[in-house]
Amino acid sequence: MSLPVPTDPAPTWANGPRIDPDWLDTPRPSDPIISHALIVFAGATPLSNGHNSVLLHETIAALRPVPGGVYLDATFGDGGHALGLLRASVPGGRVVALDRDPEAVARGQRLAEATEGGLTVRQARFGTLKNLLAEERLAGRVDGFVFDVGVSSRQLDTPERGFSFRLDGPLDMRMDQAGAAPTAADLVNRMPAEGLEELFGRFGEERFARRAARAIADRRRASPFTTTRDLATLLERVIPGDGRIHPATRIFQALRIAVNEELAELSNGLAAAMEAMAPEGRIAVITFHSLEDRIVKQTFRKAALPPPTPTGPAAWLPVSREPFRPRFALDPARPILPGEEEIRRNPRARSAKLRVLRALAPEPKPMDRTA
Ligand SMILES: C[S@@+](CC[C@H](N)C(=O)[O-])C[C@H]1O[C@@H](n2cnc3c(N)ncnc32)[C@H](O)[C@@H]1O
Image (tube, rainbow, N blue to C red; front, side, top):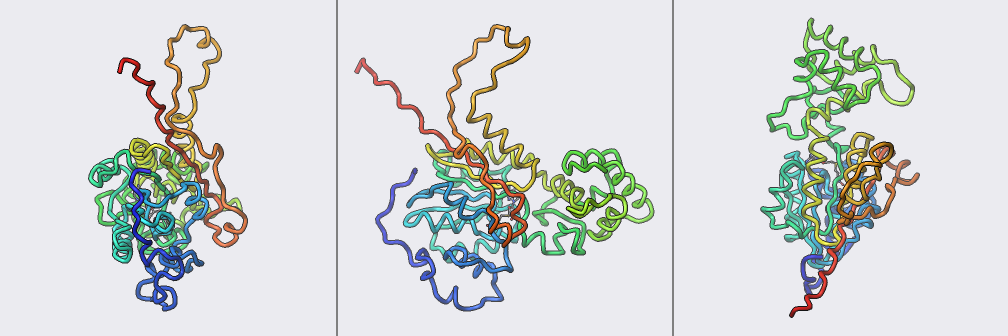
C-alpha cells in the first residue's frame, strides 16, 4: 500500500445500500448507467440494461484492496470493477479508471462527480497507460490493476457500434468511434483477399479463413459491404455451422481485434502496469478468448517463473546464467473461472478467465557493516 490511511470517516457514498437511498429506490431511466453502477457499488443485484461485470467478486477479492489503497481500472466500461474497488478501499482509497471509448468515459465522469474525488475517469488506451500513470504520479504506487478486456455488453448490444452479427448496424467496430482507426468496413472492402485470409486465421483462428476471404473479395466487386448483417449473411452461406457458435463469430472477432489492435494493446498495457506496481501490488486480468489468455499467461509466467532448463544438445552448451530472482509471483497459480451460477445468470461469462500477478516486495538490503 502506498498511501497513508486517512483517519476521516468513510464518506456517505461508501456505506453500501445506505449510500443514497434516492439512487437506489428511484428508477432513473434517463441515466441508467449511474443507477446501475451505484447499485453494483452498493452490493445489490446489477440492473440488466447495463454491463454485468464478469467475475466481479473474484476480481475484487484477488486484488485484496485495503483502505487508502490506489487502484487503476484500465477498462472502466460500466464501472462495476472500478466501483467495487472504490467501495473496498474506503476510507481514503483512490481509483483511477480509463477507457478508450469516449461514451464510457462520459458516463464515468458523471459518476466520478458522485464519489467526491475517490474516482477519476479518463479517456486513454492501454498503449498510452505509461503516460497516464506518469501524469497521475502513479508510477510505482499502484496497489491493484484491473484489465477486463474486450468489449462491454453495452457496446455489443448497441447496433450503431457495429460489433454484433445479430443486430444490423454500420460495419464499424471501433471502440473509439471518434478515432482515426480504420473501421471493419474499411478492412473488409479494401484489404487484399490474402490479407483478409491471414487476418481471419490469426485473429479468428477460423478454419474456413480462405473460403471466407475469397467470398468477401468476390462479393465486394459488385457492391461494398456497409452493414453487419450484410457481412453476417454472406458468412452464414460460406462457413458451415457447427451448432455451437454462429458461423460469423470468429470472423467478427478477428475484425474487431484488428480494428482495435487489441492484442498489441494488451501486451503494452501489461508491460506498463508491471512497471508501475507498488510492492505487493497485484494485476488482475480477465480475458474472453484463447488469444488474449495466451498473452496474459505467457507474460505472467515469464515474469514469475524461472526460464525452462534447456534440453537436447543445448543442455550441453556452457552458459553463464544469472540466478533467476523473481520480482513477481502467480497468485493464485491457476486461472480463476466463473462458477455455474454466474454463467447461468450471464452466459457471456462462460469463456472468462481471471489471472492474477503479484509484485514481490524487494528483498531487504544486507546491513551495511562499515557504518
Ligand atoms: C468488458 S468491458 C469492461 C466492463 C467493466 N469492467 C465493468 O464492470 O463495467 C471492456 C471495456 O474496456 C474498454 N477497452 C477495451 N480495450 C481497451 C484498451 N486497449 N484501452 C482502453 N480501454 C479499452 C472497452 O471500451 C470497454 O468499455
